[in-house]
Length: 173
Image (cartoon, rainbow, N blue to C red; front, side):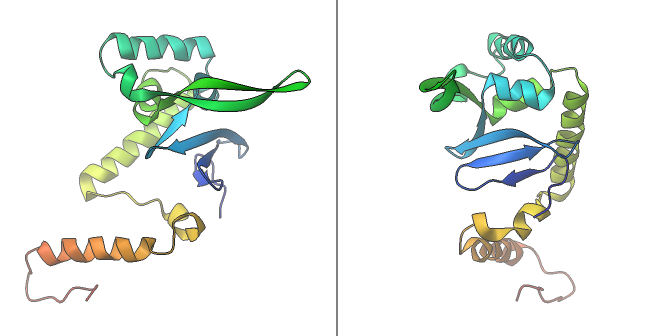
């Protein structure tokens, strides 16, 4: 598996790791409930801003009614070292919609890169109707045994519903 800058790669289990433009590992992303979750501290690392700035943007997102906190905030138990001891605490994490909303508000080099990346993905989706993460799909260990069978079934279903032009047979049979 490649460690391309800007890639989000599986780290096993319920976490992904964001690889920054400098090639170093930057942010461990929690996967739960069908979305990704970050703390304010991790969003600050992702976007290259202070935690206070992230907090201000989140307050604006919620205050303006762009998102509701009840749908985008979850507490996860985190065990971390505090001095010589390990402490378990419930820490607020923010779901992908909140992470994206902050990403479109921050002003930093990393925020700009994020917006460029997100806009390119959205553009590809709007033009093609799908987006594929080729590098992630090439590393199938995290996908499960029947992932590609499910994907092919979905493609066959879509292809079966399209009108046939010129009697061309489908490449998927």
